[in-house]
Length: 345
Image (cartoon, helix red, strand yellow):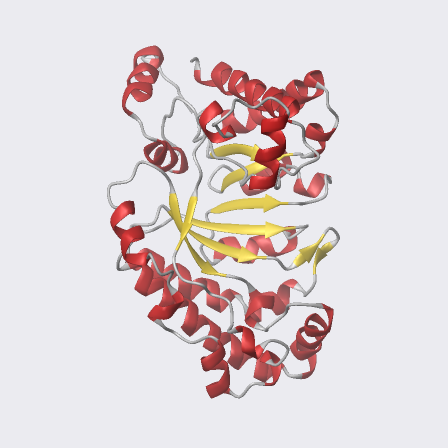
């Protein structure tokens, strides 16, 4: 938020010197910014190809047209070794540690170049520190999901031991990454819910996964990274209190139903401004092909959230081929207007 009697000069100064990375850090600390970082939605190449056919300037992407910035997710591959697919729940502790092995080979081939490139950067970079409870139990299809869910009931001690090993794995890989990269935030992925709610109870999640969260947060803070982002899908609201208590400071909800529980305005009222929010703009407005509706929705959602602070507006999911270039262009131009009206720029 920008406040105070010296508002115009402060905004002018911020605009002149602030990088997107600096904007991010000031915003999550609740300090003055001219506008939030202009994150992009992870638009894929096939969508860009369609947009070029529909009129996006040749030789440019939406990132260049609108001055957007990607958030770069760096670090090791945290997935279990593919040769163990379908067997994770039945592995012995020693076998589990081979499926989730701590190894430099988990880093990409160009890791050294990436580390050098990220030094002194202007853009936002984060480290993926956990892929979530179900990934830790080897879920990759319906049969493995059933195995995992039954395991939380019938094999509780076995699952607890597996989660301890998963926490060891995540923390050691995070430590290796933070020794080389100064991350802007830590990224915890938790795809555990459908639109009705989480697939396990809050009590079970707190028992099995919250200790992993706490250990990851402790490692991040040891390396002076205090921004802990939870990325989730569906209606995970029943788990938020335990997650926030464990150290989560930011929420990014994607591909969620448009229900009151997931409306960012309601979440801000319930959770308060101390919890940062990214996203929150319904994808449905981009499917209606109406400039008036886009502008009206952004005014009603983005304006109050920007006023309350610690908010980065973004479409609440991946923008796919059904969104024409002209509609995306309306959306970005309307977003710029709304953000400009809030900053005074």
